[in-house]
Length: 136
Image 1 (cartoon, one colour):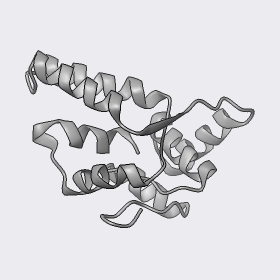
Image 2 (image 1 turned 90 degrees about the horizontal axis):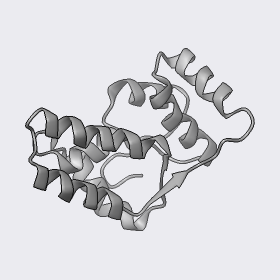
Image 3 (image 1 turned 180 degrees about the vertical axis):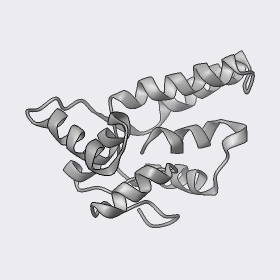
């Protein structure tokens, strides 16, 4: 699961049927994210509050919601990880952050839940299955 799906779960102006369906299916799946996910989602909440998209109370509720998600955090820093992220970022014109999600999906032989069109394109190109409602 990348940050775009998580943001759509909590920000009222980013609602997504796909994100809502994914949230309902999360307890039945083993959901992984790279450790940077926590910083990215924290930044989403901070930015939304600064821009007046949510209140302080909304931010606190979102942080609680995100903290309670049944999410496994990948903390791998194994040999070759940075090289694989770099290769994917270069090959598919992604940020290193987005390439980290793609690398994790490849390494875990898992699907990817994202609303990011560039990341969807890259996942499809390298054979990573994308989450579609009802189909992880």
